[in-house]
Image (cartoon, rainbow, N blue to C red):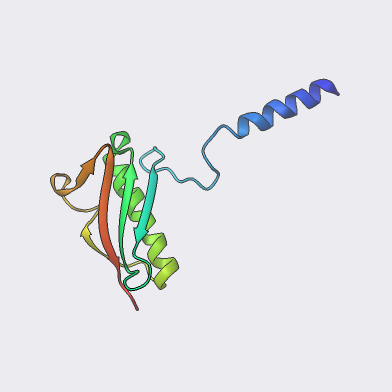
Amino acid sequence: MRIFTALMIIGLTLTACGPDDDAISFDGQFFNARLKSERGADRAQFSVTVRPVSASLEGAREAARYEATVYCVNSFGRSDVDWVVGPDDESETLTIENDTLLLQGRCREI
């Protein structure tokens, strides 16, 4: 019985070491993406930061797109985004500082 209990504890400990169950990988990597919008007047306008870009620029772009889509669907009922600086822009035009990608857009309202 002690061996069984020890194996169960080890098994439970190891399952807690991985990424969150709801974490989504992009280009095989996990990213820290945060979306900020103005409270009140213009909630449709937002900015998204994603890091670490050094893991994969393509993955960071898709992580930002995903965060924006989730925000727009939850806040406005549709996934359409008008990007000011978006994930499909040329790499040279993207703002990347301190291993963090910054994108800006606006949810299309109904």
